[in-house]
Image 1: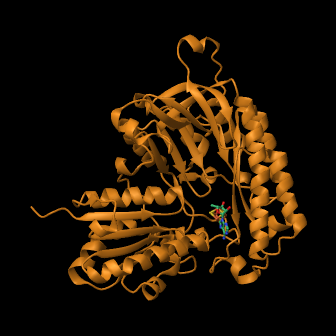
Image 2 (image 1 turned 45 degrees about the vertical axis):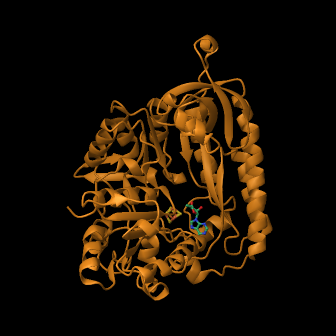
Image 3 (image 1 turned 135 degrees about the vertical axis):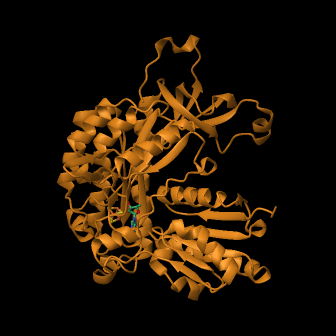
Length: 476
Ligand code: 5AD
Ligand code: SF4
């Protein structure tokens, strides 16, 4: 028998990319591939790439640069670039890194196994790309982005008991700064029956937590004749699957956070009251330039709906872009004010990065100097961190239910080998990170942890024993 092929895969970017990598690995395993942790030991090297900010692309081009020598010494190794940068830069990648063999967009990943074989057999450079947003009839464009490959690979998951599950691909919102509608194509909801089948398989494989993925996941809909399935309906059906304990969904679009959906979150015990709903800016003028399709007042209304339906148990987080085209100091201050007003659990803050191919790149100058973007980023983060730390104080002295994910980054590696107690990490139902000392047997279980200290991003606790659990109050 031939020695198995060895695959090295490097993934950057969002959870969608992590899931895409899982599927590519699963399809290559079917052809007898094994995973390896180093490019030197691999005969196939894949980069799953991101185009959302320039920095992510630079990272991939640097990684490719470092690989050049390896490929010169071993020209038989196959090097592939997949994901959003492949779709965006297309043959430009061959110009920048001429030793690359494959360029495969995120809508064409099912072609990877055959393309690798072809490149090995025939040599040459190969591409598999989806149609651009103006390159044909909508249905043809949609079809060219379909990669709902149900193949899964448990070894590629965040943990053996947590999995991503795609319910939607693409995006039709066309925010002016964003490249995603171009790289991932039109918004398409996946048929509910497929989603449910996949969730059942994941549950059978021991998955306790499922995170539903979509670019605007709460805009999900699937039409079948007269019947339209929305996210609230899907959550209801997923909640009934035994074995699944927690269901999350990211990322949300503010205007589609309806009462129906929030009521489903409230009424379905497995659905996490964690809502990631990016605001992006606290200024109406900036939101308009971003073409986000809502005003600050719309967002406030959404926060009111969340508070009304879910109350204090809800944890809302956001994304912000600082230094977007023409952002004045006053417009930036409006973002600071909204962070203070909404008291997000956490915010992901990004410096605006101009993306060729977007409307902002074509029509609006990237005129906020880098130093100012940096200062605004730090300032916004400091305000958010203070709020996160202050709000986490509410957990002091309380017990929270934690799904234990594994040893923390600080865990003693010798102790991990001997099976002695180590520092473990996990998350509450509302996505707060908790660390505590415990036996490694606890990994994969949901257990109560008593919280005795907090920082902005972490709750510190101890395992609640039977004796100490008489005053058990579950907060999250
Ligand atoms: N520059 C900076 N941040 C961006 N994001 C999307 N496009 C850009 C860009 N061009 C951010 C948004 C989005 C998150 C995933 O990335 O905040 O919500
Ligand atoms: Fe990009 Fe806007 Fe779509 Fe989100 S909603 S993926 S930011 S275009």
